[in-house]
Image (cartoon, rainbow, N blue to C red; front, top):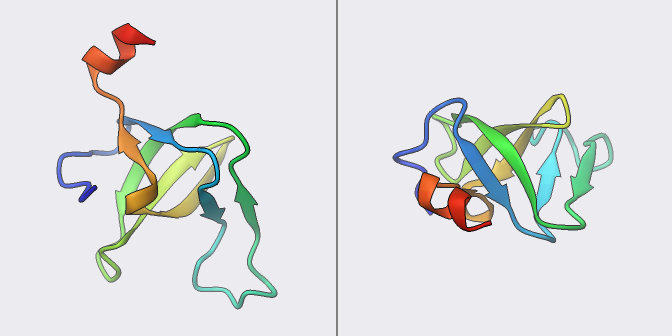
Length: 82
């Protein structure tokens, strides 16, 4: 997914197994990360202008870096189904 239509505050779906990084610029040994254990929801925060394959999301009261391909917008129609 390109994320072109997502804006800050949009609800996004994070599938099970997605990796969230606290700071993707940190070395791997210093980076804090979590692996999503069950499908979750978060708020879209921002796209990374320097790295178009990355975005930020607001999840569990923190902003995390995530690969854009790992998040999906939740549309109103989808919201009504679940």
